Image 1 (cartoon, rainbow, N blue to C red):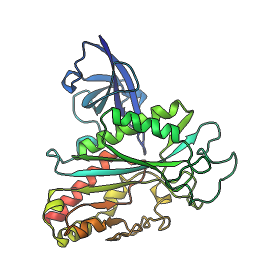
Image 2 (image 1 turned 135 degrees about the vertical axis):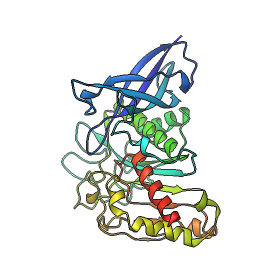
Image 3 (image 1 turned 90 degrees about the vertical axis):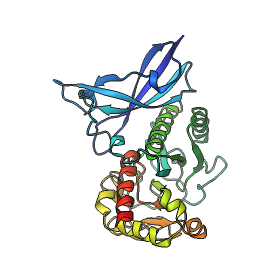
Image 4 (image 1 turned 180 degrees about the vertical axis):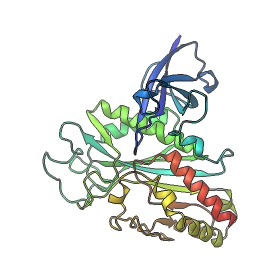
Length: 338
């Protein structure tokens, strides 16, 4: 029997990378990552190489069944140079978490986007629906727009074995969210990117695109932007039970604002304005339960005797979860070592 292996990778476009994929047909595939060969592609067509030296390599790193196609698999890959070194666009290779000590939960917001009207579903042509408020976690055709696409996507992710922990309609019309959790930063990044891939592909059937821009309706209008809140912890945070540990970590973040903002998504200055439950991009704060802070300390962490997680609320919807995780791990380790 022949199987279809869909190799997925991130291109080299700046400031925001896009997903690419192509299909390899393989005979007698047994369904293991070890059976997935390295493959190559034309990097000159993806901003990852020049025409005179165009070969880039795809290194398989994660494998999922593809429930949307017969005899098919989804193969998440890293991009390597022709000499097998990590390509400069390869954020996964920068993650310092080989033992899976860091756990991540990403709250991915996005807008469904009607390619005919160039507006989210629920927006009238050349206009706006009623003010935001009734759309969050809504039900009913007046306020919930695009549910068929979102539900199909959820089913596909669960059938693929991705640890999707929930979905909900968000604050603006046509805006939705999914949540991915994984033990291990690389796995969290893999599953977030494959979930994004399945969303893009599912939306095609409905004549919809996915708008990952953090503020697609513009900076000055009273519509929420889209983030990818990053919930994170490591063994020390989960097990020791010491407020001082969390203070040291948050203080380390306060000293490395540029490190984080530089990988937290292009156009994030339009979202991080100090309004709509955000802290301004040029300021930093942390507090218990404060959704207007840069980093929120969940009340559950405090109630559990200072054991648990932190939530970095600055991360934009178009950020690369690999690069986000790499920056968070680096700063957390520096804070704990200080």
